[in-house]
Length: 256
Image (cartoon, rainbow, N blue to C red; front, side, top):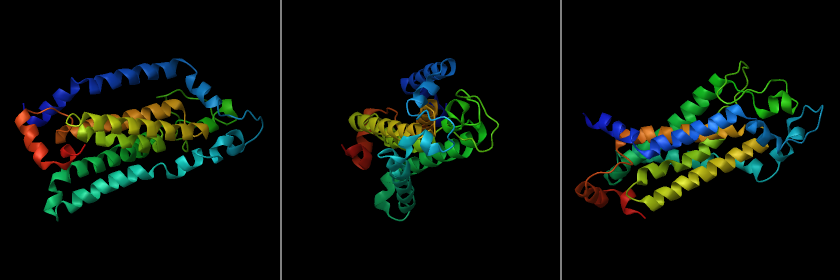
């Protein structure tokens, strides 16, 4: 078996793949079979009847820290992904950056493919799921659609959350650092999960997304990073000799 298929085969057997898939499947069933999405959104709905103003029905959308999270929460991801792209380009000019060429390209690709192409370019316009503020349960015109059920509205784009995906993107460096630097990898994983959840909550309190939208944003970004990492060999064990050689030349492994 050639190296690339071997890497994908090894990744398929790893708990990093099947455990998140199991969690995603079970939680999606929970959202599908219950009114949990509605119940979570209702916590932040004002309950005013007859009002058409979104800000009147979802009063926290204009308050802090939720407004700032919406306005500025995407910039850390843009900085990391954009920085990775710049490093990748610069590595062809400055040889000192060659050890960072693959990591830079990886960070750029995860941002472009995950939050960019898959979340905002494909899933949101394809699924057409009505947002919480647009459904009849919260004084909107459209019926509620459970997670994974497609809608037919042209301007509905609740599934998944683009802002939350940018927050979850901050877990991407974890795939570069594992398993050589488990502590740093865990730190970035927690930072990404925490950032995505907080930004996702900011969208929930504003009536812009359901909790299940945030869940699937995390899944798309995580599995994008997992798949993109495989061809680079990130996150996979090698023999001690190769690890030692890599530690001498790779700044990402020496750090921490």
